[in-house]
Figure 1: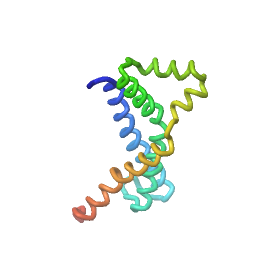
Figure 2: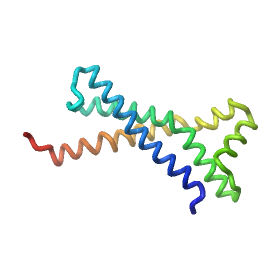
Figure 3: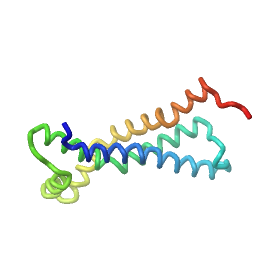
Figure 4: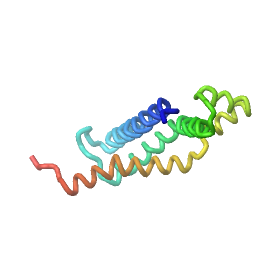
Length: 139
């Protein structure tokens, strides 16, 4: 039951941590470009773009770990004990750096689209609905 759990936990931390970090960084840059202060909110259309770009950057930075987790889990399901290092070594020995790069980016388009959409929904969509159904009090 716990095979691959440490790698999977690291994947989740890296995944959601980078989604928020990249999105917040991009929002800060957009605020500077548009002359807004850090305390001012961006319009939802700009927040959606920022969340999409943050999700894309997150997918690009975490896809190697995603592929690694999937390979470890599939090897474990087949009854083999495979570590992260073993998986990397096997990929390198079968085709050098080209194989490692292909291994680390397998399924990128689908992963990027998924991460972009879920980041928009979680980071921007939830705030939209919260503001709509429970608007902030005016001072």
